[in-house]
Length: 185
Image 1 (tube, rainbow, N blue to C red):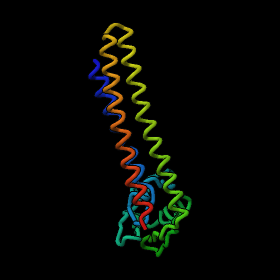
Image 2: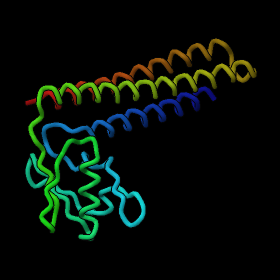
Image 3: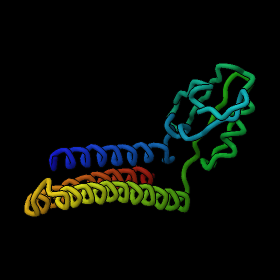
Image 4: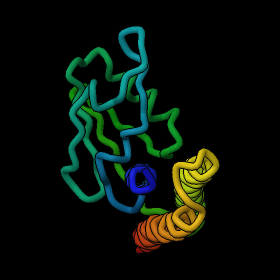
């Protein structure tokens, strides 16, 4: 029973680390990446849809994204969604495809992005700690119900803390790498 709780906690913490890493990919750095547009939803056909369901996104140059809509009728909607997003990018529409030049980041904008990334990392750490708290609750409940002894629960809590520390360290390592990527000129 204790092993099941610990395995479940480790699996859930893995998911929070992966979710944090995925969120990091949506933060703009100095180079173009199709992941930048993943968070953008476009109002088209009477509903909100992810941009990658309406168009092909490619990276022909390090500082350029091109968006080729499957249906030319949604070009204006895609353009509008990009303009309204928090990316700070201006699309160029030539009637066939949308070019999205990625300008060089200013020092001030880099610092803002680092703050944003640190906030996302903290959310990931909190998620891992919440998983730890839930697992501790299940362990205490098992002890209260007489399913396991106090010594076993204490050892399981120590193992749980080690697992939590490992996952927090993984988030911190991903944060450090992303900060270096953002601050790279």
